[in-house]
Length: 125
Image (cartoon, rainbow, N blue to C red):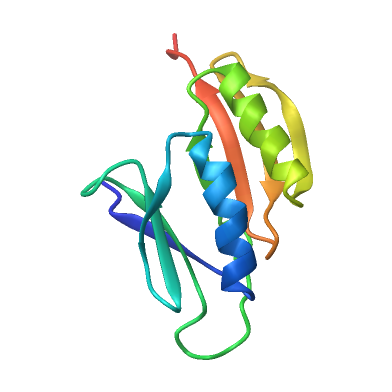
């Protein structure tokens, strides 16, 4: 259903270094990169996350209520993504923990203030 999601960056080089390391933990890698945009995913043709310098030349900003959620594959995987993001300079927006009976997750802001969630879901009963 989702082709790709794009989030803005003030410094594409620093953002690419952050996402190169972080997304590797989730099996992701940079699939395509140009001087103003980088696309990450697990395989060609699958859903992707892109980081970019705003096309209008204006200042990068993040959206209130906008968030990108990255599956960890397990609670331990979600924890590993959270820990790596913090290690790479992200700020905590919610430490890892069980949020609902079927949802385990955590929240960070990346180097540009974009909000990320790392999560694991079980079947809703």
